[in-house]
Amino acid sequence: MFITLVLYTDGMKVIIKVQRVNSATNYESTLLVNDDVAYFHEHSSQLRSQCQGFDRAIITQANTPVGSTIVYAGEKKTFKVTPEIFSTFIKGSEMINFQVNNTLLHPVIVECRLTKTDMELEVLRYTNKISSEAHKMIMKHVKPGMKEYEMESLFQHYCYTKGGMRHTSYTCICGTGNNSSILHYGHAGAPNEKTIVDGDMCLFDMGGEYYCYSSDITCSFPANGRFTSDQRNVYEAVLKSSRAVMAAIKPGVKWTEMHRLADRVHLEELLRLGLLSGSVDAMMEVHLGSVFMPHGLGHLLGIDVHDVGGYPEGTERVNEPGLKSLRMGRLVQERMVLTVEPGIYFINHLLDQALSNPKQSCFINGAVLQRFRGFGGVRIEDDIAVTADGIELLTCVPRTVEDIEAFMADSEKTFSPVVSSQKV
Image (cartoon, rainbow, N blue to C red; front, top):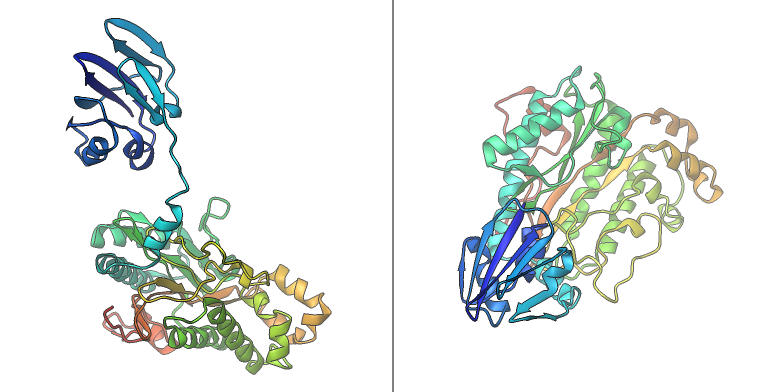
C-alpha cells in the first residue's frame, strides 16, 4: 500500500507519495504535519503534535509506484523515496534533517510493559478463558488416527468462532509420541504432521491472542484418555513441581530460584521412580536437572508471548545449563503476568551427553532410562498474574490425572482449577 501526503504551506502545494511500510511504527511515529488532518484519523493527533510550519495536510491512499513527485512553486522535481524520507521535514523551500533516537525510550517502555494495568489484566483473563476452553475442546476430540495438525486447526477454529481471537500468539506446538520431546515442534521444518497413535502422549502448546495480548498454555495428556503407569508417574512429577512453584511465587522472590525449585522437585521425583540414584544436592551441583528440562521455567507474558523486561540493564543471565535459557532474571513483582511451564523430557541427544559425562552418568540408572527412550515429554504450562501475596491463576484446564481421565471420558464432567483465582 502507498500513501499520498498533500501539504499546503504559504499557498504552495507539496505532494509526497511514499510507501506505507508499517502503519504502527514507521508511519505513525514519523510522518509530520500540523493543524487540520483529514483521513487516517487514528494518526491525526500524532501528526498534529510533531510537525510545525504547515497549514493543512490531507492524507489519501494511492497505488502509486515508489519514486515520489514534489510539486513546489510550479516546478516539478522528482526523487526516489527511501525510508529516510520518514526522518525529514519539508518546510518552505528546504529540507531540514532531524534525528530520531530509537533507543532513548526503550527502557521506559519496557518498564511500562513489565506490570499490567487493570484493563490489561482483564484482556489477559479473556485470552486465557477462551484458550483454556479451546484446549478442553481438543481433549474431547483427540483420538488415535487423527493428524496433529487437525488439533491445531480445531484450536484455531474454536478461538476465532467462540472468542473472536483471529490469531494465535505463536505457532502451535502439537507434539505427540516422541515429537512431544521437541521443544518447539510444529514450525515449518516439522509442521504438526504426524498421525496420532494409540498410547501416544500428547503435548499441545497453544495460545490465542486478543487485542494483541497473548496467552500461552500447554496441556499434556494421553491420546486415548488413559495414562499408563510411566505416563502417570512422569506427569505427576511435573505437576508436583508446577504446584510447588506456584505456591512459592510472591513479590520479591527470585525467578531464578523458582527455576531451581522446579529442577529440584523433578530430580526428587525421578529419584523416587528409580530412574536416578544418589544425592539430589549433588545432582543439582552438576546441573542434572537441565538434562530433563533444558528450557527455562517460564517468561513474562503480555503484548508479546515472550514479553520484554526479563533482563533490565545491569541484570546478567546466569551462565549455567538450563538457567541460561531462562527468559527472566529479575525479582517477581506484583502485577507481572508470567508463565509457569515446568517439563520433563527424554531427549536422546541430551541423555547420550549425560551418559558420556561421568559427573552426571553416575546418578543415572541406565536400565530404567532405557524404558523411557521414545517416551517424548510432558510439559504443564499455566499463565499467572502476581498478586500482593501470591498469584491469580488465569488458566483453567483439567490438571490432575484423575481430572483429565474423567474429563476426556465424560462430556458432562466439570472440574476446579488447581489454584484458586483471586482478583488482582
